[in-house]
Length: 276
Image 1 (cartoon, rainbow, N blue to C red):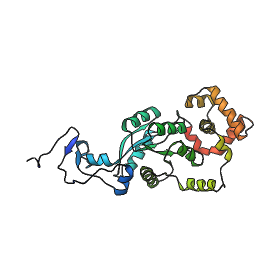
Image 2: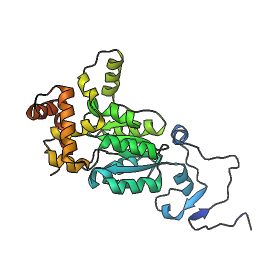
Image 3: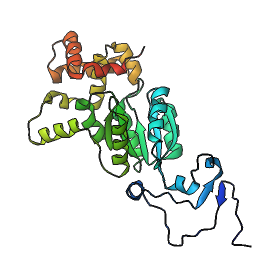
Image 4: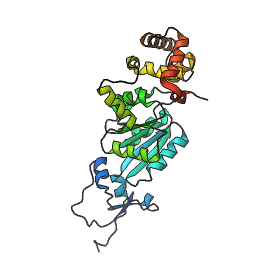
């Protein structure tokens, strides 16, 4: 009678365990290598999908943060096609994202950090510091040539451009979840050129601080000093100081030259910062 009994805890149904030597994978990389989904626990909330509670424990947990609701839901839908991943939740906007990440502490964070009201590179640093066990995959329209290296140095584990395919996104997710670093072929090529001391990108940009780069991106997006101050949460005086430093470092004679140069360096990708 005891062998046939079914135990019903609050969260699910436990079936008699027939594997005596089974142990859960200890990391996402083990799950991805072995594609394990142990069926020992049945979660009542997932009966309709056929997904067990044991599988949910074993799956890579992912939180998706998009710059819009459509972007967030689209990325989540793509990721959940692969049964090795479980999207714990999604958000768009800085404050909602922070609360969600603290709640779920995901294995992988799929995030668009360059939001209107946030310095993206600084946010990546903060997230990497607060959640060292979470692998951060950046999703962005911002120029790889400018931002990918900085994002990786800030603590990200990968940088994927939004104009890529769904297959490339999943390749990036799998690479990051398995404990490796993901970069596009272009970034890999640039890294090799830099290693060989044949840089194809102006060295002067490397002289800018992360905050100065954020200001430069907003200038390229044709934002005024007042709008830049509001978006970054700093004073107009601080923005003007950053502009002065940028002009000195990049050799621009005046504000007009700075605006023109910002557009040339960062291109149309910077316009994703511009609000309606």
